[in-house]
Image 1: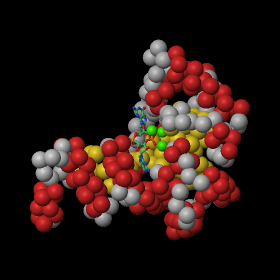
Image 2: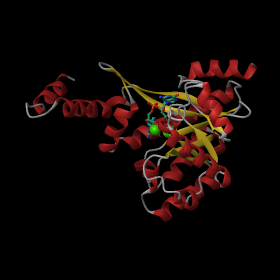
Image 3: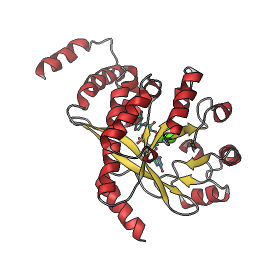
Image 4: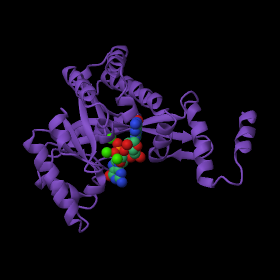
Length: 280
Ligand code: C2E
Ligand code: CA
Ligand code: CA
Ligand code: CA
């Protein structure tokens, strides 16, 4: 470790700014984060707005750096993508999530679906479907209990390959959601061409609907309307207030997710939350 420390300082020279030095250090530490057991997964429920029933929980990765504390995914995921490490991280999260489903089932929490975020690099891998099947078999869980969340960037590759992947997943009864809808290019055509079961409206829009965000409100309304017309499930993410929830309910949004209902929690805490919630 001392050896590595020395190397790091060798690479840092006065021409390098602090930001790129931080990136350099984080990337080299990230390569070891999995084997050093520094990653963990937290889970955040998605709830049906009309019935209050929990439809699934989203797995979100956390990195606890031994020296620097929590590094947010918005910082380290892009760094992991840059060095091609994201595929390994995603697979680690998938494995954890599958084992978690199996554990909850054995603890008689019942069958709860888990949604896992896949980066574009991971989703576009040739052997993706087989790897998922293998993981499901290893953890001995029903494919119907797995959901995959991808963003539009995963749709920019070979269209035929993507469609065939999505159809194979659908055939296996694995759910696939289009995440962060409304950001990026958000081609409406994606909803026509690709067989998604769900779209998730990005939290940037949701947070503005009660904040004089007339344009955001109009966009949210249109996405919900469109999804309903196309019979695609629609989830609002980042719901923080009752006021936002009321508007979403009026607009006929199906599901929501956000601090208003529950923050992302470590598995034990989520288990307690779910147990209490089910008995209310
Ligand atoms: P995302 O998939 O869009 O996840 C939603 C983010 O919003 C999460 O941030 C979640 O903690 C946060 N959030 C949930 N409810 C609220 C709310 O009411 N208000 C606010 N302000 N935020 C809320 P998080 O966990 O920091 O993750 C950030 C992003 O990192 C995720 O965005 C996703 O793109 C990426 N990410 C997280 N875990 C993974 C993973 O295992 N693999 C990949 N490829 N990406 C991941
Ligand atoms: Ca997500
Ligand atoms: Ca999202
Ligand atoms: Ca996002």
